[in-house]
Image (cartoon, rainbow, N blue to C red; front, top):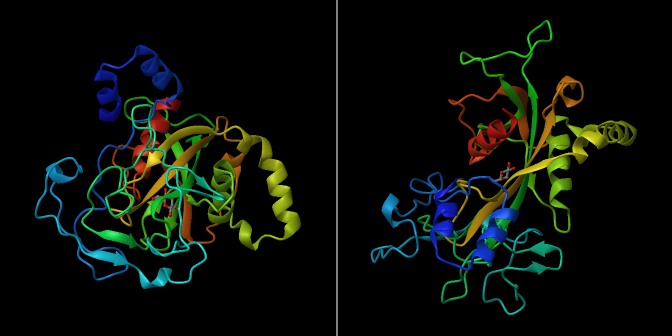
Length: 312
Ligand code: BGC
């Protein structure tokens, strides 16, 4: 169980709150600190992050010298998915709640801190994990949480005779569909941003079809056929993780959160037997074995660790 869980369990609060909390919380480990969005150059810029040592990440730890640069990428200007600047008269976000089609609510809330992220005295949302060494939005469109969805499509690795392959500890080997990201060249889950008004689970399925099956170039009929064939499979996804993602684009005022769904093909006959084609932002796609040494984009390895635990 995560430090966040332990901390909450350790507090003396009404037992009703605790049991409610434990009942409805999925059993995933919440991400409690970040590494990938600290130190070095901010992606696609020459802006150097202010160095934040491990013991100075949380906002509650005093760090008087902290003086991060402010950076919002000029590429956001005029983009339909990007917020205006905070303080602009026509920008009146309701933090911590849905704003029409856009949700500014965070998955980092819990019964003892339902809103999930604070605002600083100037009215800017603050990263729920802590300091990142850079203020502003960077390349992220929204102030506060930027919501993504990740499909984790899995099957058991099989030998030519159809038997499940095992590792040196005689444990079955799980495989998942990974894409190679066009922006960083890293292997990752084939996820993406949730469109305004879109259901998060629908976004996860759409992203899988776009990035791993290249559905964007399919004819209408082909796409319909695929959708019908996989309708049942994709209606049975389990939420594996929802919360903060340690993404290199995160800043003190804007960050990535995601919901990851596991779609498991137990006998390998549905998507397990599919021909994969990289599409949209992906430049490669393949089934990859889940092993301890796996290195993936952002927090995707942590998400796969949860899937593996659940499946074994
Ligand atoms: C990716 C998702 C990822 C999220 C947070 C999105 O751009 O497509 O796979 O989980 O960022 O890193």
